[in-house]
Image (cartoon, rainbow, N blue to C red; front, side, top):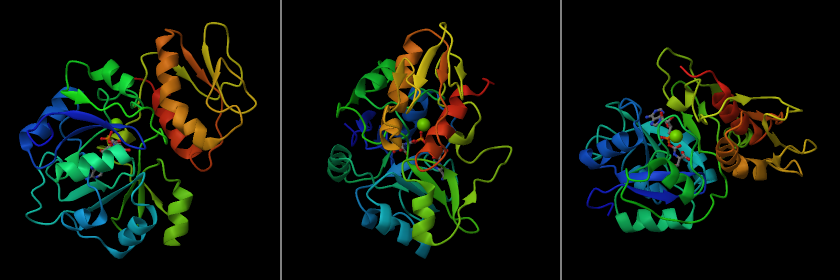
Length: 294
Ligand code: TXA
Ligand code: MG
């Protein structure tokens, strides 16, 4: 189906992606249509291994170090695109930098090997909404707009990949499944924060993103009866991201619990989450979920 230009959602270890042949303009365009995604937002190309990345992009030394430490895995690198890569211009939004990732999930690996070409895949949700961590989430948002979804059960990591760029030294463009601390330890260097510009490079940087339908209140140690309370650690809540305070478990549960809370029809209150390790990615997503809608 991917080879003939269809849209196929599939599980990765982070979230479900909405896949299309990254070398087929028509197929890539249909991703934007299915998601209602502003067409200037570039997409991540997924490939099975570093050799396939090297066929598409130049890999500077710091990127090579991160690639060997964290691929396959929850890391996306933004790299200079080589001439004649065959990648559709829609994937890079016409630019000369490509975001690439080598995912680790066995189903994603099988699909990428079988497809034999790079697969563009944003998270498989309508633009601006919560990322899907199950096939049910994908269908809830995109049923009737895509050709298939591969059901591989829940995603083990549950937040999107960490995105690193290399303009003027390594930059954290999006906090994600690989903690920024681990990347800094690997590089022996501090990551610069993402540049704040009028037009954000990554729409994951838009203030209101990953938004549930309901209002979201943060740092809520207590909630009133009207609210659906999401707990963590000692704060029980109606439902907990992790009752043992385990950050990895909390990340894996995050989007599923937000979907569930959203379905209750009540406003959502979320207890404070410590800002270390994966907590940084979790808090980033929660802030965007709570941001006023534009
Ligand atoms: O974990 C993930 O990264 C998932 C799975 C499916 O791989 N994908 C994902 O894709 O989260 P998406 O499209 O929802 O988020 C990708 C982010 C966007 O914020 C996009 O703007 C940014 O990556 N991005 C893509 N290409 C870029 C580029 N050339 N330069 C800078 N940012 C880029
Ligand atoms: Mg997304």
